[in-house]
Image 1 (cartoon, rainbow, N blue to C red):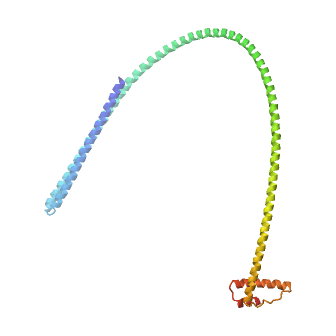
Image 2 (image 1 turned 180 degrees about the vertical axis):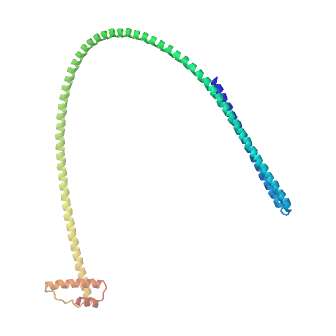
Image 3 (image 1 turned 135 degrees about the horizontal axis):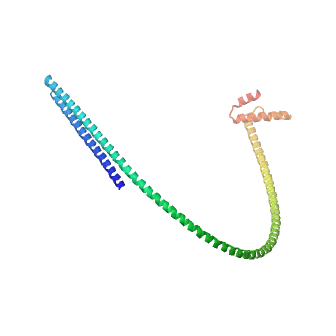
Length: 306
């Protein structure tokens, strides 16, 4: 019930706030309308002022006085609006104060109700606590009876466990003997596998030795082929040098014929002395290169004589 009253109070407060806001909005609308009207009036007045520009100064004075009066009226209206707004604010403040007072009263009532409820709850809890204590006492008695029953059960279980332990130990000894026999068989198998691995390693060593021998033979054959190829290349180079020598000899003969055709002045040079012959060949090679380069014979001879 108190919650419903609180909700209604809050709804009433919100409705009051909304009404106040709507009233403020309407007042703002009226103010804007009055301002718009004043603006239009000023526009019309300005138009009339331009139209009556040619009228007398007295008429203009009356118009200005009328405008001032309108302005004063607007100011008075604005002041009245402000006064109404202040009055509404004070009314809203009084309403909120009354609302807060009612809220405090309702809160005090609710606190009293809550205190009563807490006291009732505490009494209920105390009764529940006493009932729990009685239930725990009954439970402890039942637990003691169950414990005695469990003790008797444990004694019977202990006897049966000793019997089972005796049987288990016998089975364990039998299993241990069986495991020992199995380990012995496993050692025999491991020794056999080791002998197999040893034979495999020996065979692999033999195979590797055979492969290494074959690789060595292959490398030897490759070296022999490489030496044969090198000898073949050497013979090819020798033949190339012989061919180059033949071509050089042929070119020498051709240059000799060219010099004979050009009445070369040193063609009858004696070559009995070896050093003189070497100089002559050097000079001849340089002269031939100059001829091949296209220099005049006279210039070549002059250079050589110098």
